[in-house]
Length: 214
Image 1: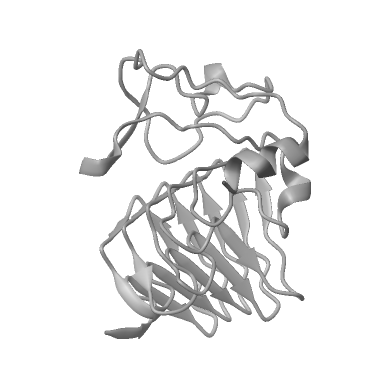
Image 2: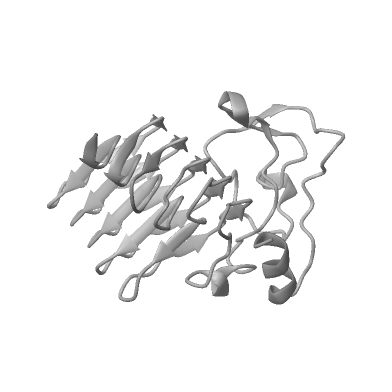
């Protein structure tokens, strides 16, 4: 078992640009897919799927780190001690743009501890066990293009994260009219399903919490 960063570990000023990498089936004590420690890497158009940890940060863990995470799909990751998608601690300030965090199996979408903060724009956070727009990011929901909608992946159980033609993650279907471009790492890949239409329901924050935490 890798102690930190099951897929990639960046530390002590290591600031690579990582593009179009698939982090799949990794496991570590901390940061199942990717761990940034005292570093500012840039992660672009990457997919994090089915990564898990013993403690925090199923897909991504940040410790005194401020990575840029752009156009990524983060799906089906697990963290028993919170942060299924991303965990930020000890003065970390990760920035996420045009990224999907969905389907975490445990640990909720994200968690930032006091002294850290997660910044999101044009992100879709949906369907995470343990909560989606949780307390540390709830004030960003509905602003800067951030949404709560089924991404409508074509076949996620088989690792196909391309989007159905009705997905709200496509630039032409963004429910708020924001000019976000594509949200996530994968483009359209199949027709719209007859079961779901990708719409986003208007709701109060209280009503949203009742739906996503049930």
